Amino acid sequence: MSGGVFGRLPIRYKLVAMIMLTSGTALVLASIGYLITDYYQSREDLEQDLQTQASMVVENSGAALDFLDAQAAADTLRTLSSNVHIRSACLYKLDAALFAQFQAPRSATPCPSSPGPDGSILLGDRLLHVEGVHVQGQRVGTLFMRSDLDVLQDRIRVQAMIVALLLMAPAR
Image (cartoon, rainbow, N blue to C red; front, side, top):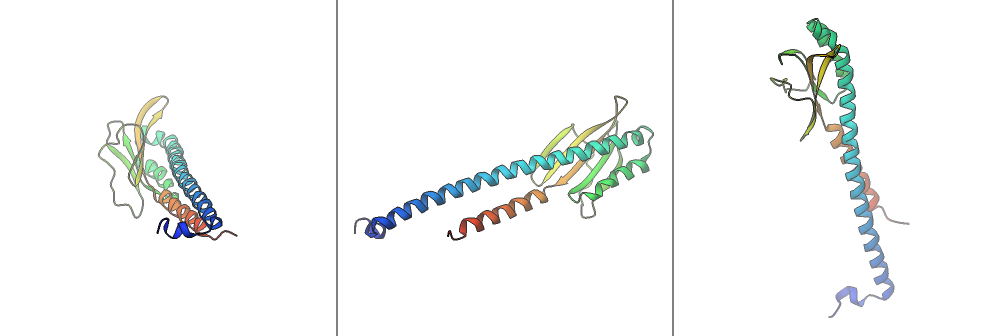
């Protein structure tokens, strides 16, 4: 019983099996590489999009903070409602007191007590972005934004299903 079933196969079938195994391994590794690359590129794009939206809000809310116009600040933050992934946006005065906020309809997470340091950070299922608001070179406040990562998770799920279907499709 040396060699088992594989050992009793004709050389032609052994060669076909080795080629299929090698090709299949290469395709699986290439697909995994594609999925990983797509994940990190999509995550970078999502972060860049959030930074761009934050910059627009910062640009349009400086005067509201400078003149302590909470209604104008709230109106500016409400423009973020068109992006379904932004869960909340909070505008703070210079002393870190909450000045205005936007909460998405299905978001239950309140604004943090203080905005934290400037920058972006990815935490599990959310992306946080903090940016200073300046008027004529002087900092007058801080914008805090929270976005979910649902779009990223959905994209990876769809890409993985497509890759799996392509790998299982019979070759012709």
